[in-house]
Image (cartoon, rainbow, N blue to C red; front, top):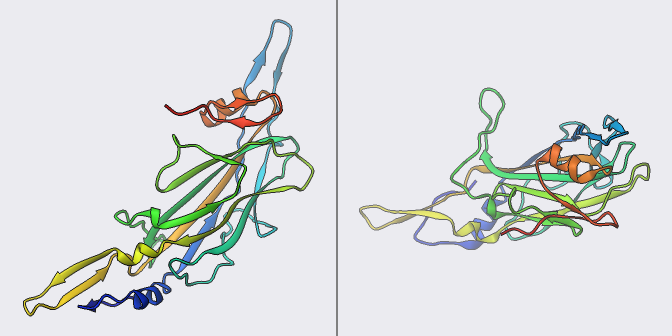
Length: 242
């Protein structure tokens, strides 16, 4: 636990104290049912999307619904140190698909309330939680925030191959979290430093969903409300932001 430190600001002490921060995360397996109708003068078809599905995989192991993620990390993380832990997606359906992943990060109170919920700490910045993302994914600036990162995989994910595509390599807590302090001076001139990130945990969650490759631009717009470009070779891209 981080204690108040009078007059002397000890970086070494703070680093070891911050190791008491406990990591907890939750994972989600998700899928998207997009059912646009496509009509011509002599043809009409409803796309079957019940067999479009995507699963989360951690370090080669598929995760069950609401399973914790990044559970292989130690219970205490040292600021400034990089921790490896691989999160991937896998096509668990019967159709080729485009995949979207949403990663959320935030600081929460250390202790849960009477309902077992850990309340978010709104005045602490999630930007101190650094996620190391894998290549091949496109971040959507218009949808992402300080707390949320929205990623689209640029290639179709093939069905029936067992292939996994990594989207998260690992994470770290920025070392300058140690510099976020409040100071108070009493009548004797003693200075008390209170570390803003004392007594809080951080929480990361991830969810993945998918849309079939058939008529993908319309399907993605219908399911996710996002306009994308699909090249002839199947590569997905986002329109440039203004």
